[in-house]
Image 1 (cartoon, rainbow, N blue to C red):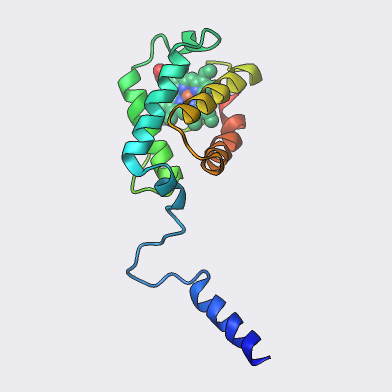
Image 2: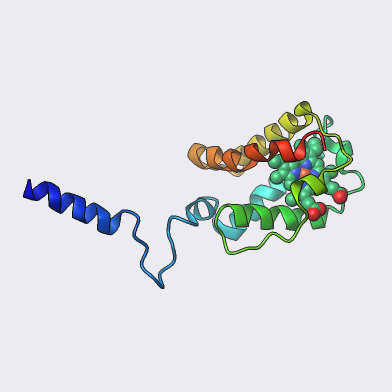
Length: 144
Ligand code: HEM
């Protein structure tokens, strides 16, 4: 019984406690798995290359300032993965308004993202977490 109490006490101490002043290792775990800023930059570059070559959706981007989009995507992924960035772009509804994107457009975009994640050789579990960030945004992107 004593051993059990000890185990519980140890778990309580090490489990979720984050000591003040120390960086929260949980919060930026995905950011770290992505390889921090250089890793996110590589991922966004690979994704933009993929989208650029995708005849299903690349026309949507014909009047887009790609340097601007690149910067905003990097900020967005950095912030969403717990990294030290602040996304300065528009809301997803606003950014995609007037495009009337379909489910198929969204699926093509996700396919391109997966291809990009494979190109930069992200681990399967990291890929799942990235998809977990993007998936819930679908209602804000499609049909706007
Ligand atoms: C969850 C999925 C998506 C995310 C997270 C996302 C993210 C973003 C971000 C951060 C921006 C820049 C916002 C700004 O300009 O302030 C943007 C713009 C844009 N997105 Fe998406 N996007 C998604 C899906 C899509 C899809 C499926 C398409 C088309 C097939 C698309 C086409 C565009 C275009 C064309 C722009 C540029 C708009 C402009 O030039 O003003 N996006 N997106």
